[in-house]
Length: 541
Image (cartoon, rainbow, N blue to C red):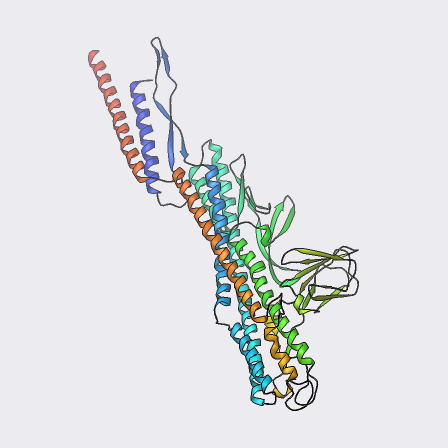
């Protein structure tokens, strides 16, 4: 190869390096960009009697600075941080609900007990009786309001889940299109660095919405899977997430994943526990675990208050000489058959012992020979060969004949706080005596004594309400701590990725000077070759 050719190859190599360095500098603030380097290699030497003489340099490829393990750690950390931050942010709103006196449940409960105590000393005083009615109405209203605000949180989260599903579908489609473009570009034998960076950035964004894992194929395409193992993207074909409703609970919004397997469409239901990472997991865990727990805690308290006061009040006599009636009314516990049931079985639920109630929903599964009752709060299972049965303070009865595979959803206390009402508004109907004798306050004293009675799990009602607030606060603080830790781990992972793939302007500036000098030196070689060639021509004249 001529000296001119050697100089030309050096000129081209230096120009390519300057171009790559300039591109790095231009993309220093581009999200997901990986630093690119020109890989140069010497050309095979040319044999002569004096040995092998170099023929210059050639460009092998343009390679991005990339570490798959580091990139994978960043994506995992993104998913964990997004889930923790989302769940913590949502739980803060519930904590504020219970930690402040905006709904005034504690104050309303204290006022009710106080009015009952005052009325017990003046059982014939209409004004004292009216104060009991007023404070009872206020207590029921405060429980209604607290439950309503929890429900509002649930509705807002459902809207957020819908928006997240739309975003996930959009990102999955982008990955499918990028897979197609990368697969075509790989046919040239070189790596399409910019397309790979774009896809990695989309996968990173996807991880903030739902935690995924990836598997690269031989053609360069990337298959993407959610944490349950279901495929979200295969090659250039994305699956589709959709919203449906639970056949056992029509008010519960479900997230499904539909993917094509040849001519068959596979539909999978995604649950809060099957997802690991991303805003969707945080939203679903908050809705299906944290919110349900809070509402069941309120419902258990409302049910216990109503059951305890109703039992005592019914034993008394009112000012009209009539027997006492229920002081509070409650909505009936909910027992829902699955829409997929094929039998005629119907379940009904009632409160047998308020002191034994758990703040939980239940699921009953029938296999043809026995019933499995699952306490959904902690997964505890009980089996029985027949119904009726009493469990955790609730009586479960069956009518009709269930078929094997039938299931039922039970919500014994979930709606109690939302529906608790004072049963009447006439002060004369309060049954403060055990007879219709004037001044009989024996039943009023029994009602007032409830304030100090251990009723729920070894606690008084005021203590039980304080425990609910403490539980919600502890959960919120725990989630906040988890979010803080996840954020720190994400920061560390990003820092490590930046050290591998990031653009350092000082380093790039130094490279620019070096490659500029190399370009100038190669140009000098070409100029020297021209001078030598001209000398040879002049010698031959």
